Image (cartoon, rainbow, N blue to C red):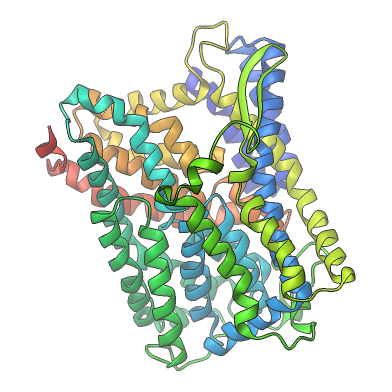
Length: 563
């Protein structure tokens, strides 16, 4: 019963956004209010605690808002400098086929950014590039979000998978595992193998959806024709992806896989290798449905109008600096990560309590990709691209106007998640576990041995409501591990299903949807994106269940030798 009650805010959010097309800036404040009511009435939390945790949620939203701001600022600064126009023309010169462009930019470039930064930045950076190439903004947002799935498990230099392992590492001794590093490598490998199998399928689904939903004549043949190129691109990505996962661990599969594949895909596209002979086109701009278009004052082709003699190399320099800074700051061996990734001043702003309630908030501003590198690089672009004060002002003004619509949704969305997380026994007078734990336990108890079907869905739910595969793994990895042991299922494969669930949940999670809509100027269409993206998300989940669940049903336990 309490599990059902805990689900009410999520159910209502899905219904009003997906069913009634409510914008997130209205739906999420309502969801927060319902969550607060449930916390007070059912979980017996006092008003002061609810208020404190809500404020803590608002503070936690700063991290996401700053990332969005920084990503949009990079885009707008490059537009105003003329750099975006140069990049657009370069990608056009690689291929003028949107089917090839969406693979190179939407998947490969997005995967590289995911491997380096994660946390919603791929869609925020890749989608605007697609818009600049003539994609309808809604199409660009949809494609960038769906394609940001396979790389997510190893996003931000392996953070989601590392987090899942860290959450269960203390439990491994209890099941007789002595070599924890081998177990971690095994987990990394068994997340990568099904992800690699599913990768070309997801790319094809995106191309198919793009053709059927946004194509000029909506013919399926345009999707079928590109299958050879999709297979080549997928192989170029998954081979180094699998090698890194099997031998190096979770830090570099997405980063290195995408970097290698990006070069191969660009070269093959330029030479016309496996590229379809037919021409796929979007309808003329005048024929676009209103919801396809940007709802802000953003002019998608404005970047093409800026006159500049800038070379392609100089236009790409900001992205190169971004990649270098991310890699340098994320690899522990270099030593900078240990300096920046701390919860103490001067590289963090910490608040221990609000209204006497312990919250343990710490904003690691120096670790936030929005600050370093996005805002920093946006400032560097000014002298690099010799921008006038007027154009700098225009870039910042446009950025603030675009972020404003998303900020409200994010404030209340993350506040809702904070209440979900912090409604446990230490904060309530009912003695119950947190709402999140109650929901997950309810699902596990309900399905029993059929838990293999539920496991990835728990990961999806965690990502959906939190906006992060890492947060989903933080919340549910221990629970999934314990459920596996209780039900006699292979713990490594169940945790792998959790990690994959968190990854696939990224394409439908509220925060990423809001971020993508803000970046693409399609605020208000969040419900449409959830409806379109839920289909590939469920396909991803079914394939995961068939692959890993099939292994479990066959009695295979890859960690058996470690016990």
